[in-house]
Image 1 (cartoon, rainbow, N blue to C red):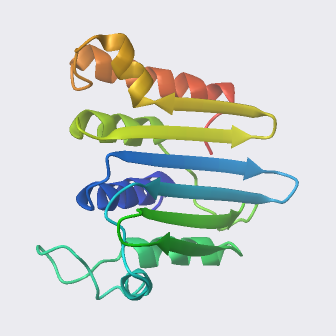
Image 2: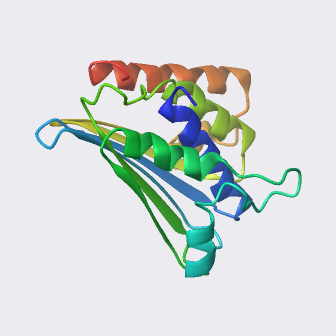
Length: 182
């Protein structure tokens, strides 16, 4: 995948398939440490330690529509290519956390990509799941939380075309406020 946002979308979809009701996505850029850390954490069903280790194998997948699961292995490879790595923490009934660390200035690091489109699609297509997105760069930060938006909408669904457009614009403005998306 050419953009890290597509990896985030894939992992969030796995969270939803695992029954998550809240998916938290954090992107932290630390210039001093020269790292970009992407964390996707959920409150889904979780996995035992054996299953968590097996999901790094491209020939292991929980999906019944195909025999391969390349999402986690490709995300791990993208992080490792940039001098970083990937860690998975999970326990049955406690959810799963996937954390990838990338060399921020590494020439091989893929761009973060279209987080506004990714978050808008997740929010609009999954009405029973809440998403919390935190982006930090230096002393600046941006936060998007569907629970806050739902509270203001008084029953209007996130899939309403005007709401979906607002979500995308809101996130794009937040990203621009941090100096743009990488």
